[in-house]
Image (cartoon, rainbow, N blue to C red; front, side, top):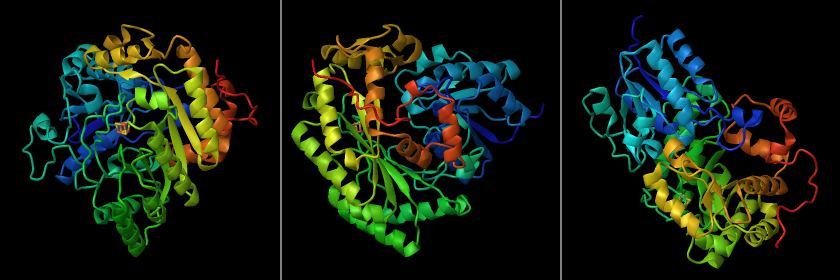
Length: 471
Ligand code: SF4
């Protein structure tokens, strides 16, 4: 069989969805913009490249399709990007299937969050891989492929100057596009891998508008909702005003989404951002319990933190920006701390479009997860399975003596349903994560096929039950 002359990237899929397994969760698409950055970089330098996402497809079937479509075998190493530790079992099975069909395949595993902590450990778990590459791929990709490194190869600490070539993605029309706006954060939250990675400068607003225009053209002027990718989107008022002016001058009416901290983005920037197209913010509130704010090392002054959160939510409501609040049930959580969060969310419910609630999880092999698990244990949490860090890189937790894993899941669902109905959930998910052609009718049919007890939104009117009662 002839070998394909194009370089093949695969974004590893999931054997089952990250949070809860139901039909709706399997509809979600996550563009692997890290892998697409590398693919775009190679393409800019004249190489034929393809990126296919494993999504929730069976890994054997997925591998078969790559061979049937002539993508494999390839004359180049096969680049497999793991976006999270949850992709491990899928990646293991996929690499096995590729090697069965093509024993000479040279499989390279990347995905810096997964490969970085302990490449040797990961390689031990994926024996069919040939190379595991830690860290950012941008400066390394040329050496891996045996190519001379061109001028201007970034070091990975800031987004590259070029934008993503979405058309390199198989079925790109199904995915909402991404534009990377900054990297890193460095705000020190105990549970977050970005805690010690310095925040890069935000992309220049003029260049951002150019990339937005290029992305609109890539999609043939169809409706898109780009995600401005930053872990901590932190524009100042001058930047926001400049973006608004540039977008207005170019007549780029494109609704977009971003993610930030509640005490980073200043309320006075929201009007200009909304006028630039900002429609949805994912806000990492995590908790409104002062005790838990401190336990997470989210902020030193919880009162100030929550005051800033209130002001930002009000500014978003005043400017028609939908806010999805992320809530993290953390080590040491009790009925009292949950009631504090719930009371705060109740007060701000008018400004909240939806919430995403889940318990803390420790990621990584024992060397990485160990210190964090000890920190969590000091707050009363304990692993569900002591061996899972070594075997999977994912450690689920019993949060406290009163809230075990099952109770944390029940409370997460209760709290989500308190603030989110099916309409809000559909609006938020279809804005970014459902395939672009997925309609409300598709959604309603999928909802009918799901066990309503496992859905994080209200299908029927809210019953009035509270997620928890103080003891
Ligand atoms: S602010 Fe967000 S991105 Fe930054 S360390 Fe905290 S959780 Fe991570």
